[in-house]
Image 1 (cartoon, chains in turn yellow, cyan):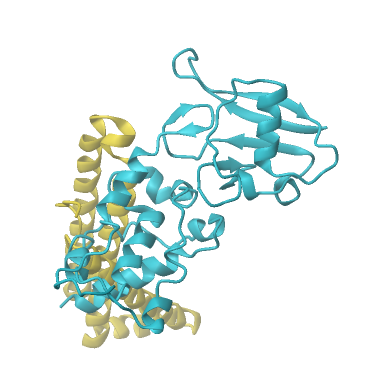
Image 2: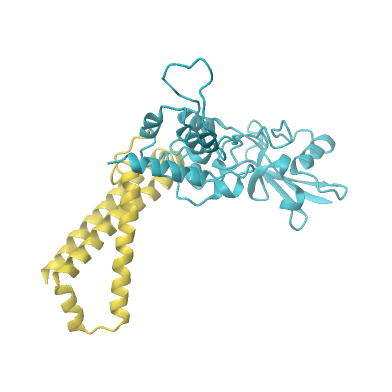
Amino acid sequence: MVKVVTSFGRSGVSDWLVQRVSAVILLAYFLFVAWVLLAGVSYTEWKGLFEATWMRVFSLMALLSLGAHAWIGMWSVLTDYLTERMLGSKGNVLRILAQLLTTLALFVYVVWGVQILWGY
Amino acid sequence: MLQVSIYRYNPETDAEPRMQDFQVDTGGKDVMVLDVLEQIKAQQDSTVTYRRSCREGVCGSDGLNINGKNGLGCITPLSETVRDNKLVIRPLPGLPVVRDLVVDMSLFYAQYEKVQPYLQNNTPAPAIERLQSPEDREKLDGLYECILCACCSSSCPSFWWNPDRFIGPAGLLQSYRFLADSRDTATEERLSRLDDPFSVFRCHGIQNCVNVCPKGLNPTRAIGHIRNMLLSRAA
């Protein structure tokens, strides 16, 4: 059992499951948005779409999925390459720093996204 | 004449590794890669160092990186690997080099040890052997045949980056060999030691292990089974 403290769910099964479910939600969302855009949409129709509560809920779900998905994915990549094993003692510092930046960016995007979805 | 290029490195005398070229006359025969090494060692340079033992794919000693693909030198015929008359032999990637083609397998064995690769059964021992139905025995096929040559784990990028945390395809194949054994009663303890984001889940299913296994085994499938077991015990 490897001890982890910065992964999304602390557990391998949990991270794996969240990664898969969030991927399906994102796929559904982006396919839907692509379909709307390709079908041709005017500004009023687009605005109307995002005024509907279900679309806001769907968008927020996709946004939260993106946050979780990116956290797990970035954590995997960073713990592959930015490690003490690969870079010596500065590896841990660099990784924690990169993880903080990733988390901060995701937090800002989620809050900003909520503001966009419900603020207009 | 076959153009052979061999990775040479002696940590005691060399500042860095180098490739040494040899010309080998195979007499037009489709010999094995190990035969080429033996011929070089016998006729051209006796300092070329590699591991070998059974020379028939049973002991797993001569795992090598042959023309870019891991395999056992003793059961890889030249016809299978040589293109443009060139044969490049390097040590298994990702493991520290002891000398030339000999790698330090400590990390690999440490991961193997982690999965406790032995039968655990705490029920009182019966007077005869612990019996198993033919169906239950069949579940071990494709798992028990592993010879621990390390071709799979040393071809796995996840193992290259985290050989101290990710158990790797070889260890996980053996892990599942005991998880799937009807006589083993330590399933829960075994699974609870694997439920972290590294041990099993660092596998991203790229199947390099399946591609190189000289025994034709499928560690990716075994890892999938372990993942399913972990999923079904999780609340």
